Length: 440
Image (cartoon, rainbow, N blue to C red):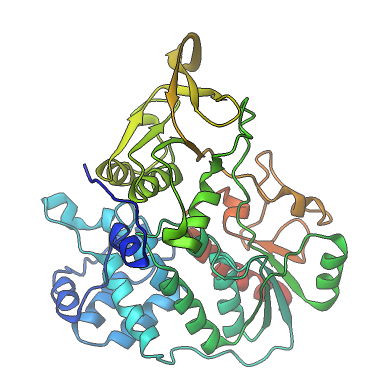
């Protein structure tokens, strides 16, 4: 079990949050690239949501054509650098590597991808230029992965693009919502700046779109609008005592940590509610911030957790304890937060039932709710003729066009919450969908 001391400086924070997939050096990359078998059916390509030609870029690295390798990557995935480190490669490309069938470690595709793209970004290699102007303009709502990818692709097709972002930094969840041991803010922002310098799309920060008048303005000025607003704040659970000080949403906790680093104070005893990847991140982060005891509590069994196995292992290795088959029924405390009251759960005839005769309290000074995020329904409500499904996801066709033809959508707004790589794919394909629609 790792024992982390509370970081009191930037250097200590970086030590506690050292990168899970550090940048390769030239020698490591050369030898790792030499292991590729260049399979004729390339299962790694099939497993990549953006279908990067992985054997090709690995061969390019091995023959010292690093610029060619990064062009191959960016051609398929505009956020190729970030995805190299934040993607769950173990269940995507690396999980599909044929070496897994031989008890040999799979090729470190993600780190090779990050190595090549990082070189081009650092050397400011000019890989792309805007397409010849077609005289049309696109507005993108949200500068997350889908929005950035849409802007990049649209510029290569000759569109003018303005991105409207509610916050003061781009890249959405990549910079605000991913654990700091997966990627640093500097690396995320460097990639967006690199793409902006080459392709020339504009991002208007601190510019939320939240009124019908603003939308009418966009509809008048732009030929198409792409919605890539992602998900919102952590959902309320409706628990008694949920409004006590010290109860925070996981998304909000991670965002504060990403922005303020060692200045964030985490108390001695923390309870994290949830069983998804965000819960694992929040628990691991609480432990790395010096919490003496971090308990991860999930309503079902270990096998039913939504989190990837490696994310759970990472949390446990940081010193996190886990409690399964428990559901929170109240946040307790006399005035201030003192703990969480749980009831045991059990499977009865295939349904999860709460046993109110079996309750107990776990003492804590902080509760982190990693129980899902609210959708951006308030925005969808003010867009005319926009069809959404029962889970408040925008419905689109195969071209990423919504029921209101001028609007296209992608990323978490349509899938309810997936990986950065899925959003990058959606944004790229939506730009092509807009191009096809406007050139009918």
